[in-house]
Amino acid sequence: MALKEPQVQLPELQTVDGVSESGFEGGSDPEELDRLEMEVKEMAQKILHYRATLPDQLKDTLVSVLAAQRPVLPHGSDPCPSGDPKPGTLFLTLRFAYFLTQKMTSFLVVLENSLSALFGQVISNNGALLAEEDQETAKKIQLLKAKIAHNVSVMPFVLKRMKECISKIDQLDSQNNRIIHPAFKGKRLADKDVALN
Image 1 (cartoon, rainbow, N blue to C red):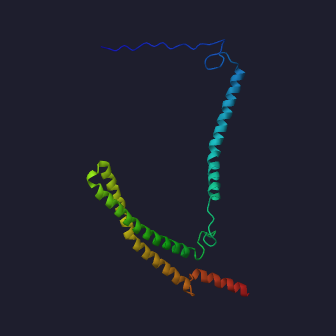
Image 2 (image 1 turned 135 degrees about the vertical axis):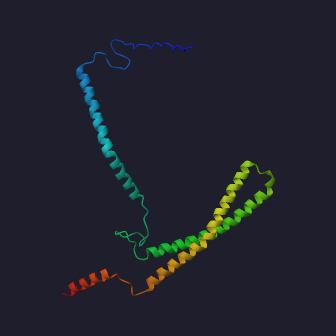
Image 3 (image 1 turned 45 degrees about the vertical axis):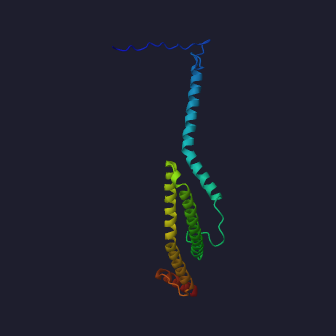
């Protein structure tokens, strides 16, 4: 059996006094069509212009906004124009990082102890009543405890490495005879000779 396609009649566009549904007169003047075509061409040119210039304007605006929101660093901690940090900046940064890691280590130890005590009580009190959702939560808690334990166990190595770096920086700062690359020595000698003549 072949299916018959339904026959649908589309309604015809009705016009009222020569104006169709689209709002344009059926017999519009060629002058008006030319004017509309010119407007469309002008709009297309504006769109092309905006497509070409807008990304650069947005980039410049974003750069200026980000530059305005850049935090003001304390004296001596912002980088030089060459991009090399000022003397002592690295040392201060390492000291601060060392201080933070010590505080974080003690915080992580306290957090791990309190979490293990808290979750140990919860699991022991409600061990028989755990549903599937509670088991998933317990797995997540175990994973969190494992991550915290790993972070705490790695922290002494990080602190040891930071102490080594700080001691090397202290040693370099305390030395009066700094090692100067030969290329810079030659340049300095030439500058002195010019000054003597």
